[in-house]
Image (cartoon, rainbow, N blue to C red):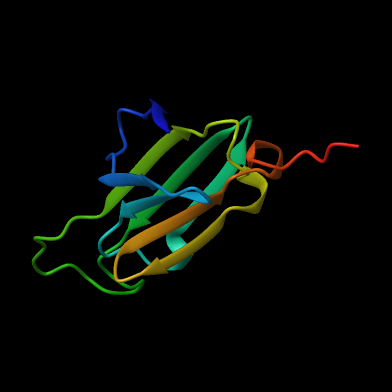
Amino acid sequence: MKTLSNTPALNVPRYSVSESPDAATVRIELPGVAKEAIELSFKDQALQLRARRSTLPENFKVLHRELPTADYGLTLKVANRLDGENVQARHEDGVLTLTFPVAASAQPRTIAIN
């Protein structure tokens, strides 16, 4: 996977990519971001992430702030051999984990001889 583009006004989150024979896993650090504030989309073999960290609930007044609101954005190109339609996403402890299975057409198979 490679980064395609990032919007300059958005923070690019730190991420890592690992691979096994069956899948590729992307771990994206989104500290302080609620699951409901994350938007993921997949189109043309590209994964697009947008997220927002808000430090205050609505109806609260800021008295002092050291943790600013942050907007995150990231677009990753996904290899054709990975199945973007069946990606699984999990959000835990400020880390979004995406698992892309290897597409059935890209997995090794045995050919029977008649």
